[in-house]
Image (cartoon, rainbow over all chains, first blue to last red):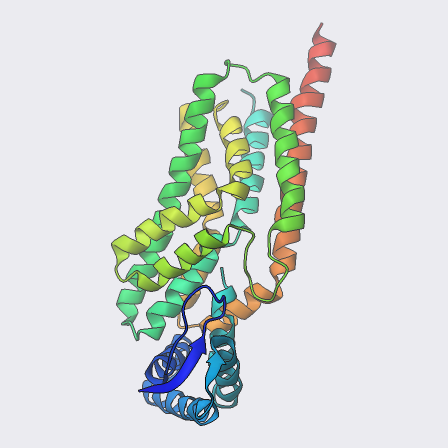
Length: 94
Length: 243
């Protein structure tokens, strides 16, 4: 599901793209599964977090990918702190 | 070669391998690789094959690098290594130790390493795209090469020690080096295979990163000092005493 909201990428090198809720859902689901969360629980968490981000993004003309990640992380922290840790840090592992 | 020489040679190889073991690029790639595999809901046996392939690749590359450097040194150096070569190696190892102290981790949250960002992005991308054991084997090979900037020092000093040993001890030395330097990968592989949460492993790594940095840098400095004292000073004094 793509909303008519532009996402400005973090480095600014890549072009902006439309906000894709499914992409966000997949990344949160992946973070939950990577900390061995049961599949059903991971899917519920991913849906809830994605929904919260969609509500925040809606009606904004543009957001940064950093803001989306930060907000998703805040919501994910409420449901699964271990998954939130991996979600926040996976870009700084290497 | 006397017993003392053999023992001290293996002590140098062991310390060099322990220092190599505290380098973190391969562990980082393995952590990321496992995270992506678990995130795709990969079956447990497949996960074990992926991590096993990676560790095997890292092991093979370590053995190849130590053997290659030893072969080149054996071909290039006279049968008795001149003290100036030992002194140069000791200085080089100490210098890398200081640079590990200063630069190893980036000054930011997480466990980002001081390697070119393009290469780090490449490894991160490959760890996500890799889906079978053959590819993870290749990734294991590459991750060892990626850390050569720092790992070359312990590899080179071990190779310099190895060429003084008899062939059977050379083989033993290479295997000892590879086994010890792979210990962190084996431990992380076992933890992941045993069902431990990736977040706990990464959190431990982040919490202890400065300790590992200091340990690696100090290990190299001690190694350089030990080699200098044993191979340059003691040998020089012994040679003067014999005249």
